[in-house]
Length: 355
Ligand SMILES: Cc1cc2nc3c(=O)[nH]c(=O)nc-3n(C[C@H](O)[C@H](O)[C@H](O)COP(=O)(O)O)c2cc1C
Image (cartoon, rainbow, N blue to C red; front, side, top):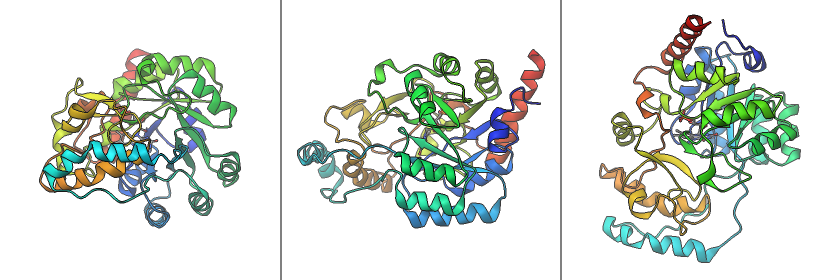
């Protein structure tokens, strides 16, 4: 039995394991598999249109009656800065000529949580809604809560955790520096001072009353038990699920992850304009890892996407964001439901052995 039932009761789940929402790397299939296994599956919506979100939610509703989480970005869209965007596009000119790619023209991408998405939450009423990069404006947040969804969001510092609690979240995800993908930071931009999971989680536990979910570098029973010992009520796990058959990452990404080591990830802003942890590749080596020239999030991605598509078509991951946390060795090639049950069993066995 799990010693701490707070998030089990809050979310109506069997194991305190949240599958991290991973935009661009998964859809409903992974969420369904994890929720069916007793964890909390997540549907990332940051890269989906309203119609795609609706379709995915319908699939989840048809295939499982278990609780699940729906995840959104809620960044402040950057002020228009045509000169900066033009400079970034120019910076990539040599790569475009090397690959034979046209100058990018496509604007937009990654809209923050908005009226349309909020209406979908109200229609489907998921048990949990999670946010990355802070919280949406109060009117939208109130509507999510009135729809009956529990609200959670990522904090990368104690200050962010306190801010989230003061703005009404039901639980805080303490995202340590080890975590793969975008840092959920929203009160600070300083990645150099970001604490790791082991330091962050217990300090957040001490600072807030709501349950804390630890994220970053957790990928096996030992990590889960360690997080619980630090006072977390649950864990959010991303990278460990990336090699499951339900993950939708490309063959190139899969191959890179399979041989990845713990010392091969960095925080970089060259793909999207915001710091995110991924495996080092050519684009990071030559432009980053942190570039002062990258256009603001999410606009930097518009300029890099055509390079990525062309390179991938030729079998190269040189321009692909290969998001990964610092524990890529825990990524397992097994069905996500089985992985969820194995993680839970391993943690429970270890808990019994030490108590
Ligand atoms: C491929 C990938 C994509 C991610 N996309 C999102 C996302 O869309 N929304 C979000 O809240 N977090 C996202 N994250 C961050 C996770 O929520 C979580 O913090 C992280 O996966 C935990 O660290 P781990 O990967 O070491 O388990 C992503 C992580 C990865 C690896």
